[in-house]
Image (cartoon, rainbow, N blue to C red; front, side, top):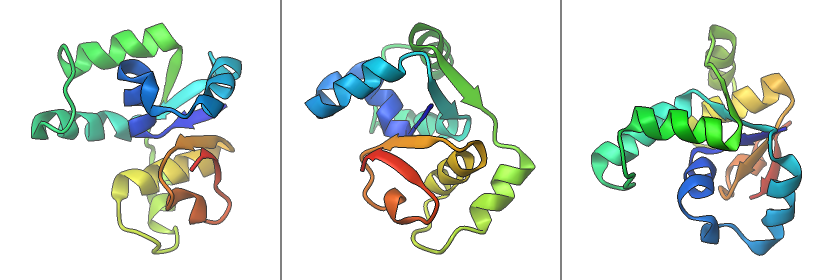
Length: 129
């Protein structure tokens, strides 16, 4: 089970060339076992609003259609995950990443991310980083 970091979901949908060739086998093997934190919807919306990411439709349509197409399941940010994110070591302050890390830990998932800071968190499994 792979929890997609926000950029990993965006690249899965828009630009596979951003992934190293070594990941294609893992992506193929894990197809149907992709998950995303609901916090990524906030991050995607902010990236689109700031012009850092361009998508061909509304965020709502982009997310729902691609969740369906790629078989991505959403994991909501509940109180336990939100509070767990505040208890992580102060390695960095990105609240989106902290919630993604707490989500992965709560559900015993591996995070698919290019981020090199996320793997430095204890009890955090990462592919790619």
